[in-house]
Amino acid sequence: MLPENEYIDAGTILNSFVGPWYKSLENPAKAQEQVLWDLLKKYGSTDYGNSHNAQNINSIREYQANFPIVNYAALLPYLKQVQDGNYKAFLPEAPECWVMTRGSTGKQSKVLPATPTHLKQIFFCGARAIVHFAMSRENFEVLTGNILNLNFPSSVHTMTQDGKDLKYGYSSGTYARLNPMLSQVSLLPRQEDIDALGSGIGRADWEKRFELAYQQALDKNVTATMGVTPVVLAFAKYVQRRHGKKPADLWRFQALFCTSVRKIHFKYGPVLQKYFGKAPIVEMYTATEGVFGQQYDDLPYVVPNYDGYLFEVDMGKKVKLLHELKRGEWGRLIISSCMLPRYDIGDMVEAAGKNHYRIFGRRNTLTLLEHRLYRLFLGWLL
Image 1 (tube, rainbow, N blue to C red):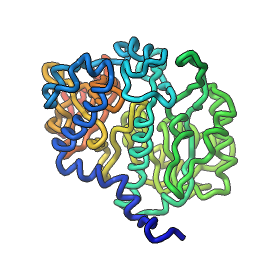
Image 2 (image 1 turned 90 degrees about the vertical axis):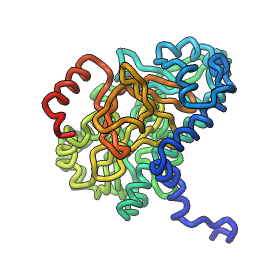
Image 3 (image 1 turned 30 degrees about the vertical axis):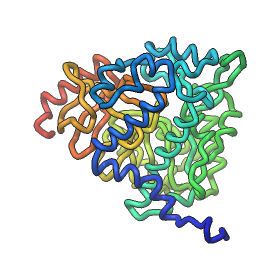
Image 4 (image 1 turned 90 degrees about the horizontal axis):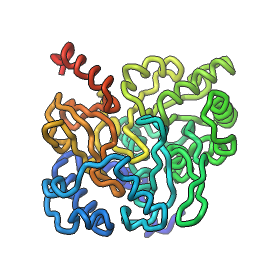
């Protein structure tokens, strides 16, 4: 038993994950201003930030006037300096590791540094979705079991950083390997066991990972799964095809925490529940660059982590802060984080009202055409 002065109530611990988020939803404008001041202090310690006058900015509008919107290609020269050992060229602190994306925005994966502050934010906001689900539904069983780990491998390639060889891999696997999770919640299998199977991502590679997850979880208390939605679905289909049972026949799922694709509830929801039972589907908006939001209630939208990131939307002719968007307004999402100032992440966002938003796809011709047709014929529903 802990000494009295070291005892912390479980409710206090859980509230520490969601309390700042709830407070930010009461006054998004104030929360976003505070995030900006915190970010400017970090940016002001870098060569990039100083070149854009970070230390003398006094408002969000000044920030927008001084810092350009940048994409991954524009950051490559600065990231090269970080890789060569001069992290102050762009980052306020040295990277703890490097991570790669799944390549969903282009032919090649993006490779990005991950600083200690960024990793802490990933873990904190990632746990937030689980904690909020448990507290809002008064279902704490989800916190007492195992979460299926169906992530990508964390050891794939080797790069040179400051003259030394460094292994790196997919961000989802890396974050899972480094994530301490909550006190009683554990990932199954361990990421190290997944990595030991190899770095391939072909069908045979995934079937080896799925079999590992099945065998290790078979007699365990599995209460949830968290991961890239198509991978979660592929695991369910594999289990039924290979072992003749659905995941719902083997485990009692309390929730499915699903990420990384659009139309999770409408396109994937019915088929996921076919395999996993009637466990609620909780959408999360996550990326290599951060954990930006999660589902708040039964509505099929995500609610931003206003207390962790600064959100803007490029609407073409003007740029608004995300919380300023009126219902039905939409545009290109721009995110500022502890590592990335005014970063064009490549996603399109639409406001649904009352801090609810939907990420409706990557910014490309097909997505924009589909969205315009949707609004033309179904816009009256908004």
